[in-house]
Length: 295
Image 1 (spheres, rainbow, N blue to C red):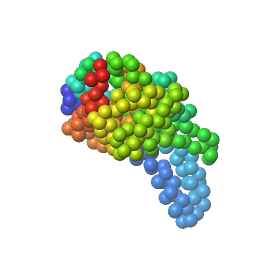
Image 2 (image 1 turned 90 degrees about the vertical axis):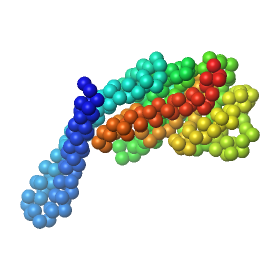
Image 3 (image 1 turned 180 degrees about the horizontal axis):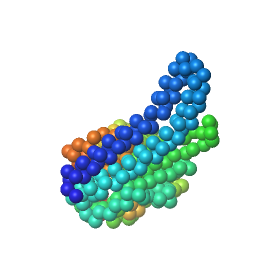
Image 4 (image 1 turned 120 degrees about the vertical axis):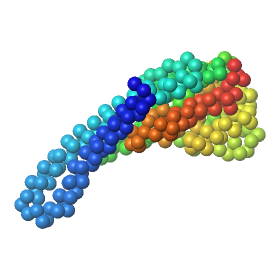
């Protein structure tokens, strides 16, 4: 199947999705109209409203399920046709698993994120760039309390989590986070000291913790601090941890990386640029955090 056929297929799924959205909204709209017009409908008003009261949940459940199914098909075509191609052109040793991501245990071991009672991760990507191996996935962590009308959901984290391999393994635990990172992990309970750097600007926006402060001064070069600050400016929240031969990074995002937007018509150039931008985040971290220098 050539590119134009794939684009046409995605455009067809986009149109089906929009139709399902209208189907989702239609019963609610009809119910509102029935309520407004009930006084003029006489004896039929009760029957019409009762029928619509039954139709609304049935119709919305059906439409919601159909939208989810169409979107899943859209994402699989989009990722396998376009994302994989660009990943292979950008990185080496690429392996993808769109259905799975990091496990809860994986993220817990990183020590970066507070874990709630709802955990989801998908779009696991492995690759290498300039000799540095990495894994990345989308992660969503929520905490749900109460039930029924008293049910409350707090989103602890929604974004991208990265793991970069370092050959240098004598860096003990160093954690860096933006101070507005509310649901930060406990760095696996290791003892850490607060570290103040020479940069007052960095100290105002970030908290630095290290098992041995000398490690923090080693990894937080001016270039590294600039990169961390840029990530923070772009995402609004960022957390990192150097631990032995690993660098863990968690960055908030407004949407899932490498996902297409089924709600919009497919524009080839825009989508290719979006995928390249998602790749560029990985490349930028490797370059600017001097991961290659630490090999």
